[in-house]
Each structure stands twice: as structure tokens, then as C-alpha cells.
Length: 286
Image (cartoon, rainbow, N blue to C red; front, side):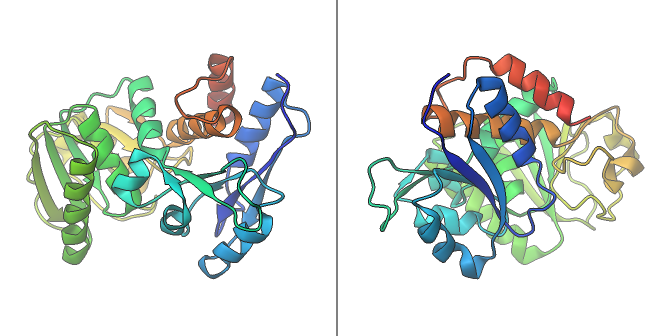
């Protein structure tokens, strides 16, 4: 594959732990994109606008992680449906032809379709879903569950105010994404007794060391840890679910969509050797 040499980076703070450079540079190698670069750039909120403005002449796009996802959505000229619905973006692609003194960006949220693809590839089903957490990733998880056909959601968080805000965000996103199926929504504090008696899918977006104990009968559910550590979260260790997967698959699937954007200009246009890339990516997670 012949293409003009381009440069990308992952932005956020901290990013020293990020596996994105490993994934993207391996993909460039597999695709024969000689000279393409993908770097880490530790960037705080206060420095974000200044950085991407100054870097517009040098970089063609960015992967964006916390705490910059809302800012990335705000500065974008063009936004995909998931960015419009959630107000967060994890991908910025420079719009071709824009004046580099006044850079314009297209924003994407590949977390939702990335998680959706990851759950499908892990053979996880979703009818009654329990989401642990109430942040941006939890919102993506809840929308993913609905897009996969869930008819019951329970959201559990540490603060009542967070649950109220989450409910409003979810209702807005559901309307904007034209999700029309009826579904039941329960919200509860982490410490409250569970209302779902038998979730078939648990998506944990809490930190890996969060100290939460779930009912023993929930062990029959499929458990997805969004964290991509090879080690189970403390919650999963205590529950010992029958089927468990970590967020490495989500990381790789959303990265594959980013690669489509950076290389082909659209998350809907596949790359020619995606199966090879996927096998390579999943191998890197072990």
C-alpha cells in the first residue's frame, strides 16, 4: 500500500502506559506504510488546544484518551453520530485542505462500535446488562448493550448525583441515536441491594482495584472488564464468573476503527488485511 507519510499520536495524561503506539505501528508495518509514525504525547487539559493548534502542520490525527475526550468533541468541526450523542471523542482526524493556521478536525467515538465488536467476538450475549460505573466509558457500555438488543439495564455507581447525570446523558444519547426498542432502566448505588436478579452480562468500567462485592449468583453472567490488564479486576476475582474477558479486545477493535479513519478516511471502509491485523493485535495482548 502506497500512501503519503503521516504522523499521529495518542494524547492524554498519563499516556506512558498506552498500548496504542504498539498497535498502530505494528499495523503500519503490516500494511507497508513505511515512515508512518505514531507517538505518545502527554497532554493535560490546560495545554490541549495550544498543542493541537501548534501541531496541526505536523500531525494528521490523534487518538484521545482521558482527560481530553470532552474537549476533543468540543473543538471538532465535524462529528460522527456517536460523538454527537455522547459529547466525547477518542479520535481526531485533520480535515484535508483546512488552513493549518486554523486547523479543522473530524471527531469520532470508536469506543462504542469497538466494544460492540469486542463483545460479539467474545461470543457475549446481552439481554439483561449490569453496568458498573457512571463515567464516559459506562455511557458507551450502556449504549453498546442497547445496540446489541438489551431490554434491561442496571447502572450502579458510587454517588447518587452521578446516577442522575448519567440517566440524563443516556436518555439524550438514546434519542440522538434513534434507539427505539423498549428497555427497563434501573439505577442504584454500589452499596444497594441488586435489582437485577440474573444479569447475563456485566460490564465493569470501575478501576481494577475497586472494592465491590457482587452476589454469588451473578457468577453465571458473562463478565467484561473494560480495563485491558491481563489480570482480572478485584470485582471479577471475587465473583469468579464462568466467562470473563478483559478490555484488550475492546482496545484492539476501537484501534482498528481508528486505523480505518487514519488510513481510509472512514470507520466504515475496511482495511485489506484486517484478519491478519486482528490476529496480531490479539496476540500482543497475551
